[in-house]
Each structure stands twice: as C-alpha cells, then as structure tokens.
Amino acid sequence: MIAVLGLVVGVVAGLVVRPVVPTVVEPYLPIAVVAALDAVFGGLRAMLDGIFDDKVFVVSFLSNVVVAALIVFLGDKLGVGAQLSTGVVVVLGIRIFSNAAAIRRHIFRA
Amino acid sequence: MRPVSDETPPPDQDRTPDSGRTPGGSGPPSDRKRALPPERPRPEAGPEPRPEPRPEPEPQSESQGGTGDGGGALTGRQRLAKAVWPPRVTRAQLIVALLLFVLGLGLAIQVRSTSENSALRGARHEDLVRILDELDDRTKRLEDEKRELDKHRTELDNSSDQAEEARKQTAEKEAQLGVLAGTVAAEGPGIRLTINDPKGATDSDTLLDAVQELRAAGAEAIQINGVRVVASTYFSDSGGGVSVDGHGVSQPYRFEVIGKPADLEPALNIPGGVVQTLKNKQAKASISRSEKITVDALRQAKRPDYARSSSQ
Image (cartoon, rainbow over all chains, first blue to last red; front, side, top):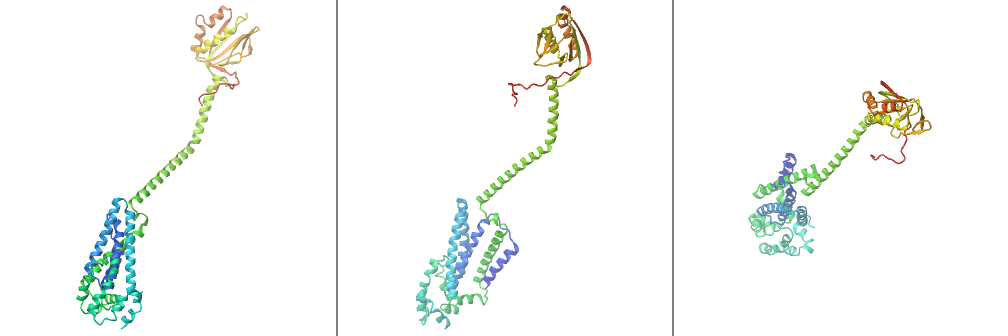
C-alpha cells in the first residue's frame, strides 16, 4: 500500500514540481525509466510468487537502471546509441511482457 | 476451501505438480519444499531479478511466521490483497515506496519533457546536427532570395532616374556627334574667310589646303558656300569651278569656320600659307573674326554599309 502511495506521490511530484533534469543525464532518463519499470514488474511477480525480498528488489532496481544507462552511454560513445537503446528497450519490453503474463496468471488465474 | 476448489480446475494443463500437491497438503512442510522447485524454473527463464532470491524467500516466508505457513497455500491474488490492504509500515514497504517514488518522478519528468518540445528534446546528436544543417541551408537560401529581391527593388526604384539620365547623356552625345557629322547646326566664335578669285585661279587643291590648315588649327565646324565640310568631304575640279561633295560652288568662296579665332587667323596668314598662296595667284582672301558664326548647312547622316561599331 505504502509502495503504491510512493509511486503516486512520485508522479504527482514530477508533474507539479517540474524539476530540471541536468543535460548530462537527459538521454539516459527514458531508458532508465523503462529499466526501472522492468524491475518493478519483476518485483510484483516475485511478490505474487511469495518470494519477494526487499534487498533483491533494491539491488535489481538499481542495477537495472545503471546497466541500462551504461549501455546507452557506451552506445553513444561507439556511435550506435540509437540502435543500442532500441535493443535495450526491446529486451526490457519482452521481459516486462513475460512478467506481466505471470502476474496475470496469478491474479486472473488465466 | 475456496482456494482449493478454485485452484484445481485450471492447473490441469499448466500446473499439474501444484494441483497434485495442494490437495495432498496434509504434510505441508515436506510437500511444500518438494513442490516449490518446479514452480521456480519459470522465473529463471523469464525475469532475471529472481534467480537469486530463491534461497532467501524461504527464510523470509518462514520468518513471517503464521502468514508464512498459510502463505504456502495462498494464491497470488490473496498475497496481493494481503500486501495492499492492511497498510503496514515495514522496512520493505518503505524501501519499495522510495524506489517507486523515484520511478514515478522519472516517469513524470520524461513524459512531461517529451510532450513539451517533443521534436528536439529527445533527438539524438546526429539528428540535431542534421536539423541544424537544414536550418542553415534554408536560412542561406532565404537570404539569397532576399538579396535578389532587394536588388530588384533598388533597380526598380532607380530605373526612372537611370532612364532619364541615359536619355540626357544620349542627347548630349548625339549633339556632339551631330556637330562632327554635320547633322546639326552649330554656332560659336570663329572666322569668316572670303576668297575672291575673278581669274578662276583657285582650284580644289587650294580649297583643300585651306580646309586642312583650318582643321590643323582646331576648326570644329566648317561650311563652304552652304556645303557642310565633314570627314568624308571631297573636293574636285569641275568645269570652271570647284565642286564640294558633288555640289558645284563658285566664287566668291565663303568659309564659315567655328573655332578659336586667335588660332585660326594666324594659321591662314603664316608665310607660305593659304593667304599668301592665293595672293600669288592674284586672288584676294579676306578674313574677319566674329564672336558668333553660325554653321547651319546640314548633311544627312549616312549609315555605313560595312563598318560596324566594335564596342558592342
């Protein structure tokens, strides 16, 4: 419950406060957000499986974000930033879908 | 009771081990431990964050005590409901809330920035460079066009003035050339030379000498007895007199000459010059200066048949 509240508060804060993102971080934000979404879906699925662990969740969340940003950064340096970030988004999207499928099976039994 | 009846039908295809385990849940601890592994492989195949947790969740669910024992039989739906509704402030909930707050923040920022100036904010370096190049090209093209139009406008502004000026210059030039070609009348200071030759001793050579002497002295317009002397003028002897350009002239020969009188008169009077020669032939030449000589004999401008201006 508190976790859901945290998400809502975060969205509201982002919309109301309008923080300025430093230019250095800007290209990595979208990828980082998608990676974080993947981690959240994974955590939700683990919770439904009854194997949720906050430490694992924190580590996977942060590592997902960092690795995704790192890949994009590396891609930019190598001159294949656009393709690489597309690849990252595709992979994360696939994982989000599979996690969502597991969650759906838990909740709707179908 | 409900969960069991609920769970039994679907697992038929999907979760045979589960369904087989749940009804026979009489010996929960051992059965559960054996039953869990088959459920695990799925998380490993799909999402990554869960492979490690496997050892951990076990103690975790056990540490939750009563719930953990019941949790073995709980469906995912019940777990979710339990996690959501009675709001408990635990460390896990707080940490997850913090991370989700960060996620929500990033999500909101990204959505907002994308919707604000979508075209450029998300663009990559190469795209930006390309867009900038295109803008530069466009600016250059427009500037060229502007310069062209400005020039055009200036030309249009000046065209009336220029036409007027050109007309004026043309008229001026025409007047100058007309004096030389004999197509316009001229007037100005000069001299009159009158040759009385009762004996008819004056021939075309004498008249030509006189004209050449006058030209050398700077005569600008000459007429002889109403015939304009120009570049193509020729003299010839005809019968008793002289013809100038085919027009017969007879004595007395009257020269109207425009030029500087102070130069023209001495040029005729020099020793061995025109006047002395005429005197030797017993002809009488008289010269009078005048401030206003009018040369009004005209001649048609003749278009040359072969010579063409090479300046165009």
